[in-house]
Length: 377
Ligand SMILES: Nc1nc2c(c(=O)[nH]1)N[C@H]1C(S)=C(S)[C@@H](COP(=O)(O)O)O[C@H]1N2
Ligand SMILES: [Mo]
Image 1 (tube, rainbow, N blue to C red):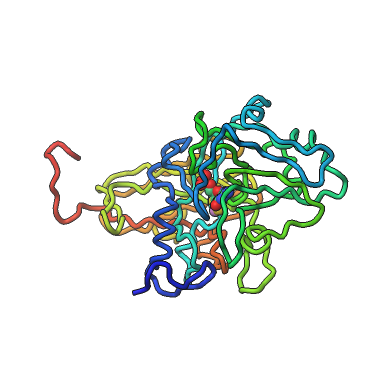
Image 2 (image 1 turned 90 degrees about the vertical axis):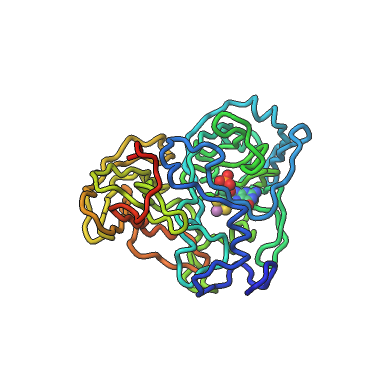
C-alpha cells in the first residue's frame, strides 16, 4: 500500500485501476457536480464543481486591490467598490474542467481523477474586461494578457502563483468578465472571492480565481499553467496543442434509483423520459443522440433552448424500458462546427479533453430484496 505524501507527482501514469491515496486527497478537496443536479438550469452554488490547485487564499475585501499594468500607458489599481461601480453584466455560463473524463483513461494520468461530471452552470455577475484594458492604454507590441491569482504552490517542481494568459484579441472579447458574484451572491472563498476572470466557452483553467493582477506583456507568456500544462499531447515531450475552448459533451441524469456502491441504476419496467444537458464552447449544440444499447443504435433527443449563448441546453429522449434486462445507456452531442463526441476515449498525457460519451448501466427489473413502505411505487 502506498502512503499519502508519496512519490507520484502529477504527470505520472498509473496502469492500476485502483485510485491512489494522492488522487483521493485531490478528489475529496475538489468535488464534481452530482449528475442529478443536471436538473437545474442554474446549478446551486454548493453543487457546482470545484477545482483548486493549491490552497484557498483568505482575502480581506477591504484591503483588496486589482492591479492592471505592464505594457500599458496608465497602470491602474481598482478596489472591489470601484469594480462594482462599473457597468455590470450577468451571464449564465457553463464551466467545465479540461480534465473532465481523466479517470477513465488507461493508463491514468496522475492528477485530479474526474469521471464525467466536472461541470456546472452559474449566473456570473461582473464587469467587462475590455473597457478596463482600453482605459489602461495597451501599448503597441502587446502580445499576451497575464492573469495572476493570489494562490501559490508548487507544481511540476515550479513554485508559482496560479497564472494563465489570453491573447490580447481573446481578452478583448465582449463576453470576457471580471466577476464578483455567482447566482446573485458575492463569490464564496472556493470560487475566487473577491474577484475572478470568466472567459465563456473556454475550459475552466482559464477562469483565474482570487485575481490579484492583470499584466500586459510584449511576448508570449511562458508560465507553467500556460506553456507547460494544459496541452493536448499524445507523447511526453511533444510540443502539443494548447487547450482552449470546450469540446461538446452531453450528460444524462441517470434514470431510476442507484445501487449505493456501484451506482448501477434500477428502473421498473416502464417507458422513461431520459433527460440531461449538452454544451460546447466551440459552436452551438446541434444534436444529441441517445442509445440504450451501448452505442450500437441511436435515436435523436429533443433539444430545449440554451440557458444562454454560453450555457448548456437541456435535452430529453423517450426510452422504451419495458423489457427487463441490462442496458448500457449513452448520449452523444454534436456542435455546429462538426465536433462530435467519440465513443472511445482519446488519450492524452495530462488527461485533458476526454469527451468520450457517458455510459450509464441500468437494470430494468426489481432488485432481489425490497424494504419499502407499501405505498411506494
Ligand atoms: N487562482 C486559481 N484559479 C483557478 C484555479 C486555481 O487553482 N487557482 N483552477 C482553475 C481550474 S483548473 C478550473 S477547472 C476552474 C474551476 O473553477 P470553479 O472551482 O469555480 O468551478 O478554476 C480555475 N481557476
Ligand atoms: Mo480545471
